[in-house]
Image (cartoon, rainbow, N blue to C red; front, side):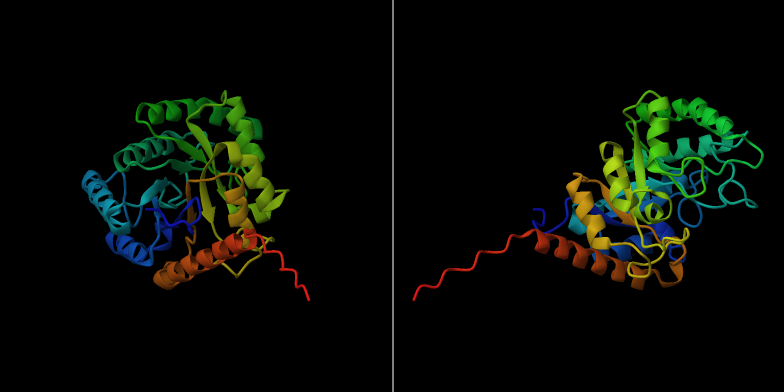
Length: 303
């Protein structure tokens, strides 16, 4: 039986915030803290989809995820933001907007295969930073040319893709993601990931406006605090995010998927931050629920 006081979406935590833990240990911690979901980043140090042992590791991860939440199982999103898996010298390269992107496409196809094996809600991915001296039109053309292949691979395996706008990348805002979605013919298999911290930096209408705009395609949500001035993931309370308003907006737009904490540079204190994060999320949601309860009218007092 579900908790009637729980939010309609699933609270999760990203494994990229547990880079100093083996994956089984990270899942043990998240299970003990009561998380509903896991955002699993494929690559070092947890699950390299190109390794000879990948299939066995995926099976083991699936078994552990199924035993979470007292045996009812945790939801999982497959994330693909690993930094140096494809090129040990250059972060995130190659990307989908590079002149040569075959390795990135193969990686994303493997991510789809892993997602299918795990029953993941989606595979989240980004466009990439446009190479220097390349025109934006070239980058958009590359995305339009390459994504149909990936969408077909995902469709054949029953997996949904979710495009994440990132500050500094070609697809930077929700409006950019919606534009690409339309240019691709509005495919059913492509959704949108919104990182609420990013919204503080690049979205003209802030977190609320971005979530409302993305709502019809909203497939994945990443939760983190961030200053308005620059792209820096921070724990809740250390940036400019209104967490209560963010959770209230997610509920208002009808989101029921995974909303996972994204702290990729905080592995040094992962268990404490995972605990503090779930406490902050529960407190913020309790505030949302409490503020939604109408106050009783005072009784009239008759002499």
